[in-house]
Length: 293
Image 1 (cartoon, rainbow, N blue to C red):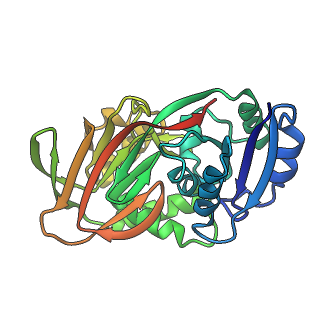
Image 2 (image 1 turned 30 degrees about the vertical axis):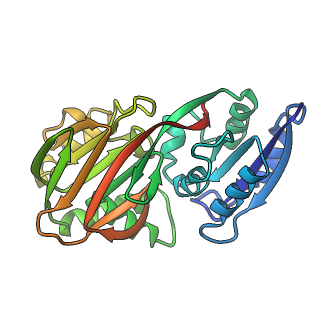
């Protein structure tokens, strides 16, 4: 019996608007295996609604065609369901796809879906938000906030925001509680890594696993100017864990607040959300059925 598969396409995701994803899907999908439906998102949050309807209609597979933000919208509705999640990367960074070995070329990504190799992955929750790849507070969240405001996406604009914010953003003092331990740490930013990277195949948590029941809490200190190039080199060669600006905590849950009680910038899978004063992160082990490469 054919499996019912729904592709939810974000038509304005990332920088790949010129690709006719519907045509690629119809040409490359195995029609002997799948009964195909295609829907387009029309506004922010629409992907979540379409995914929820798919679950209610007992759709076997829902595929997000978009970036990490689109994936988040859709995957949130599939947690703890029998519906399988798939990805065709169409964003700027595509961190989740890189981590799951899903090709960023659409035709090859469809071939991965045809093979239907699945596994159960961990899901993380930060306050009321699910995240599937990474979330963060501080500098990288401010970068995400400014990057999301850009008219044009892509690595160059992302790098521009990194440089601009490096010059102006200051470290905060955080209180971090995990595994019956409480510490105070100054940090430029803190990333909560379920998967290994922000995107663009840049790994800030090279050894993060999406199936170990743990979140990698990556504490980054602000590098002095003379360390920027060595630190960038370590980041680009997947050796950032060896850099003196980094510290890592591996745990199943963590609570963080600022010592001064001021709100802090926050991003969820690369999308900036409202600033918060406290962060509570926990791991939900193997809560999502995922197609992987």
